[in-house]
Structure formats: structure tokens, C-alpha cells
View (cartoon, rainbow, N blue to C red):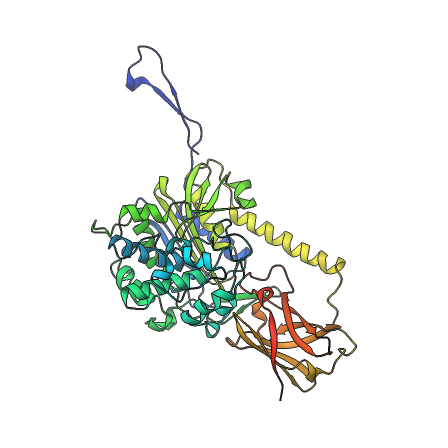
Length: 518
């Protein structure tokens, strides 16, 4: 933080007042940024990065690094397209802000006024739920509730009507508006509000009302409208320390190059103005989107390195204090891609980092570069994450030595395999099939292709689902329930590893048997 100390002496002219800076920040040069990105790539195993820095509305750095794919080695450029995942939430809220400016919507309008079929578990919550509630992760539902309706592959994506129908079955774990718990489904509901008001799907409205006026030439809100597929960065995941390409989760989300994201950043630095000075959305709505609504627990790393005292969620944006300055940001993570956009509004600066690997590199890059604008001795967050990675791997290695191994049973399950086979149904998710073929049990989720694998026996009626696609990193325990007649009645699931992404919310499923295998 920059402090200015002022010494005033009686009778001394104003021009003679002494200003003594106690600390001077040193912004990174392009060469230093290059070195930082290359270190992140090498040490965090990231194939490609696109990064930009915008200061006072001007692009001071924009560059691509590495490759789109380890399989073709095509270089990443400033026009390489990346999936920005949950950064798309800022596009949803900006679209709603346009409608608020046009007096077609109010942030505090009730959702049921636009979507009468909207229904939460609690009838009172249903009646009171507002547009603002959709955007601020305070629904009372647990972290990632219902995400399997959209995760992990695009084929798993339920329709908006199916998602809205499922909400009434998702049980809350906290009181309405009392706690922060990230939830993606509410943004699908918000997208439906946009559709009802504008009479067009949200992705088409965003492209017409936001992307087109900003001339974000190559950016789209629906991957089917990507003009040059060869410009796409390919997603990557680590499997047992080895980098592999993986599938696209190609549902409706923003796909954009760094050049386009620069224009998105400039829009918010200018508080909603287009390059010609005209308002795209009003300064009032800009302030509303960046207003803290739901308090969050302060992350340890931010508390330790950024002197953070508060963190909150606004309308599609994270907010916190960062060395005494307001910090506004959002990350995005989807299968094999991570991204991060961050602002220091008081310094009129922002950084965007897009990567094609599931890692903390993007967030580490934005934090490190921004900290150089305000700190004399800034933290290198890439080093922090590199060390964190090393500690985690050492922990996992030690854990394997000390924990009870996940031994697969050498004995048979207590029942014949065909007695476990059948179709099982969960009220909010749908169906999961257990089949027996060639003396093996198989598991297949009805939504999508990714969640398909083998069931390996552990002990008793406990198995582990080992997915065919090993890039998922989401193997799960399966525990069959047996009724008083000795017949399998259902099963429950839980991720094997605590590091499994929260969107694999297997633990929220309560699957009941509805038919047996023919």
C-alpha cells in the first residue's frame, strides 16, 4: 500500500510541504511478465496461457504463451479461444443490468413473477426468492447442489425446465440468505428470466446486447457459433502426474480470446461505457454489480498474503480487500480449463489470465501482477502455488503409506451380482443404471457419457465406481442398501478423494431401485 506522510510547518508555503513515500510499488515489465508466465507453465504443468494487463483503459500487455494442445503444438495467440466457464456469470448479470436500466426488471423482483413454475424445497423461500438471490449464492442449498444436472460433460446438461423442476427436491443445509454456498443452477434460472423478458435464449441476447456492441469479434456465448474451431485451446487434465487432453464441456458458456476479454475488462474499468463514451449499462448498475451482498469466509491464502479482512459475493463478482484496496474478481473452472479476471478499481488496473489446464496458475498470475501495483515487496503467488502443489503431493504420498489402503476384496459380495443390477432413480437427478456383464458390475449415469465405469468390490455391499475416463479424477464409493427382505433397495455415493471437485455432488443423491435387470 502507498502511504504519503505530510509534514506541515507554520509559515511554510504549500509548495514547500514535504511528501515522503513510505513504500513504492514497481510494476512488472513485459519481460518480467513473460518470465512469470513461463514459470507458471513449467512448474504447474500448463500447456497454454493467454494473458492481458489493462491500465487506465489501455492495453499494456497482451500475449499468448505455449500451445493450444500437447498433441498438435499449435501456438497460443491473442486470438486463441478459451472457455471462461464461470466468468460467464458476469455476462449474465450484465445482461440483467441492461434490463434493469430499461425498467424491464428490478433486482428485487420475485422470481415467480417471471417463472411461475419456479419452486424451492420450502414454499416460503419460493415466494420470497428474488433475482438478486439467484445471483448471490445464498439460497440455503449446499455447495454445488444439483451440479450433476450439468456436470461433467455437455451431454449431461439438463434443460432449463428440467433444472427448475429439480430444485424442489434439493434440501437446504442452511437458512435462506444466512450463508454463502456456491450454486450454479441458480444462474440457469437467471438465464431463463432473461429469456422470458427478451423472448430469446440468454446466449443469443448476450451476443446481441453485450458482445456485439463491444466488438468482441471472436467471442460467442454458444460453442456451436465458433467460426474457426482450429482457434480453440484444447482442455487438459493431469492423470497420475501426466498431462492428457480431455473432452470439451460444450454447453452454453462464454468462449472468448484474450483480445475479446480485454474489451470486457475495459467495459468494467470505464463503469459501463463503450469506447465511444456511450453507456452500455449505467454507472448505477455497475456499482450494484460490485456491491457486496453475501459474506464469505476469508480464504487462508488471502488472509496470509494479501492482508484480507473481508470477502463477499456481489452480483456475479467476488469482492475483497487486497492490501487495503478493493479487489474485484471471478474465476472459471471447467473440465481441463481455468481462467481468472481481477480488478483493482482504485488503481484503474485489471489482469485477465486464460489457461487450458486445471490448475491455480490463472489466479496466481492475476494476483502476482496486481500486487506489483500496490506493494513494494509483492508476493509471487506462482511460487506459493508451486510450493502448495509440492506439499500436497508429499501429503498424498505420505497418506498412501499411513492410511488404510483401498483394498479391493478378494472375496465375493454377499449377494450375486445380478441382484445389484437394475435401474435406480433419484428425484432431482434422474436415473443411474447398474448392469452385470461378464461377471462384472457396470455403472452408467443417464445424463451424459462421462460418468460410465466399473464397480469394483471393496467389502460387504460396498463398491467403488472407477470411471472409464480417468481425466475425471472423481472415483466414488457406492454403498448399496438392503431391505428387511434381503433385497437391494437403493444406493448412496460419496467421492473417494476430498480433492474431487465439488460439482461431483454424488453425496446429494438418494438413489432408489425402480426396476431390475432383465
